[in-house]
Length: 217
Ligand code: DC
Image (tube, rainbow, N blue to C red; front, side, top):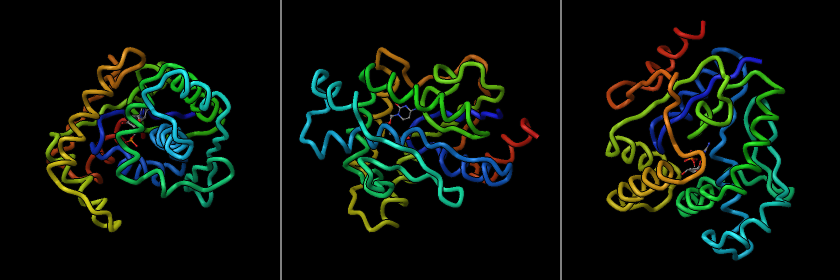
């Protein structure tokens, strides 16, 4: 199977780039962040404190989470319900970062990610794909950008979706998520030793995709 690992911090442009690459190569795109977001949403719905390891473990062990594709687009299904847009809400982002730090949550999601990656050609975006989930992936990229640039991108995305957001608060949240994601004990956000690093601060998503495709094609 062709698996392309695309890691990097929040707002680095991974998902936009991954979608372009998937389309060009006619393969699927697996957004692994959506899976951690669904875990966070589950906790939110059940009133479980995402920092409470025991309660989180209990609820995530039996989580009814399914990744489906409709016309090539990923649909995230939680308890039989399409939650693809609910998981994108700003309040879910920070909860996802916190819940994803629990080893029990990661082990469960990584198992699903490996199964999916073994079953189809795909580009996966996340934080630990090249370093932990698929250490043997043939192609690994680490995309990053200045935190202010990343916050601006997220801001634009949320505003376009009519969400009310304060730029400074969003920038702070991005920095806090960077810290959380890269400092957790188990499988943190990390560049794999053999990943190609691309700084996306001053280049467009199309240009990043072209760069990546030049390695793959
Ligand atoms: O990519 P995203 O912003 O949708 O991810 C939401 C959170 O999920 C992120 O802050 C950290 C976590 N995450 C992770 O720990 N590992 C991944 N492979 C993907 C996301």
